[in-house]
Length: 224
View (spheres, rainbow, N blue to C red):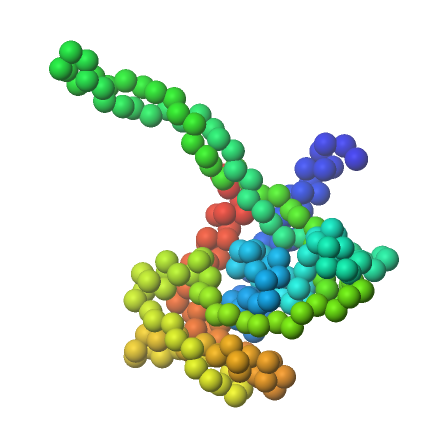
C-alpha cells in the first residue's frame, strides 16, 4: 500500500468515527446515555465519552484490542472485523513568544522560541467487539455514574445540576424550571435496559448541549 493510500484510509476511518458520533446524537439517544456509564474496570472505562459512544453505536458494551482480549483469555473469532476509535496525536511545536527582560534596570522586549505541546491530529485504533470473541467469561459489570468531561464545562456554564433517581421506563429527565438533570440510578440500569424504554434523555437532558458538542467534535477531529 502506498503512502497516499495509507493516508486516505486513515482519513476515511477518522471521518467514519466522527460521523458515527454525530449519528448517535441524531438517531440513537439511548446509546448516548449508555456511554455515560462505566463498569468493571474495562479498558473502555479509560476512553473518552465519544469513543465509548462509538463503541455502543457498534452494538457492544465492551470492545478491546486484539492483545487485550488475549490477556483475559478470549480470542477474536476468525473473520471478525474491527471498528475504530480515535486517539489524539500531540506534538511539541516551536512557537515564537515575546518576553520582557530587564537589562541594566531597563525593560526590553525580546522574541523567544519555546516548544509547546499541541494537538495535531487523531489516529485510528482498531478494536473488536465482545460478541466477536470467544473464550473465558468476563466478571460481572458494576456501573458507576460519571458526567462526561466533554459536557461538564457546558453544564456548569448553563447553571445545571445533575442528580440520580430511580426510573422504571426512562433513562432520565430534565426540568426546565429547576434546571436539574435527573439520570437513572446505577442499580436500576439493568431492569430499565430490559424494559420497553422511551428514548428521551438526549433530547430532554442534553438538549442545551448537543449542538455545542457537535461543534466541539468537528473542531477536534478536523484540526486546522
